[in-house]
Image 1: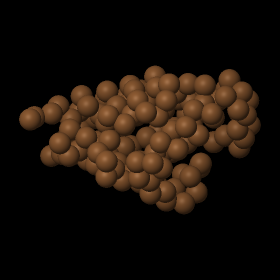
Image 2: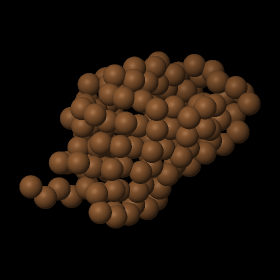
Image 3: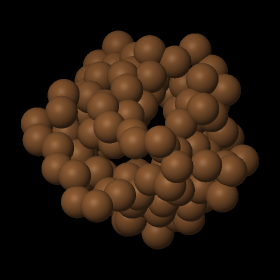
Image 4: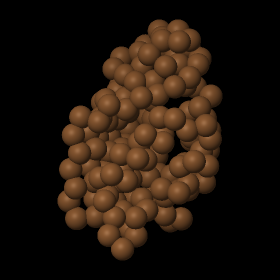
Length: 133
């Protein structure tokens, strides 16, 4: 079966924006998913997450954010990998740094999604946040 990987990655990102629970994301992930988030203003050390870790991180994020939006700037497909360049905007549900509740955070993301059989097997995030402290 052939999959349009760029369309799957875009659908995944749209689901991130509108999800009500982490369970909505499960259909996109291979059971052996490995997500790596490299150090940034929020995650101080490299974080390596499995499927359960991603569910927990999603639930934590929903307590911090009222909503989030990804504007995909560019996407590329190389073999089984989709690279997304996006601008992320998160509206806060709690104050963070000098941003009040209802204020917005902004970050510039490069995300690499490696697919296997139409599911995300590996994901690497390079997140650059605008200053918020």
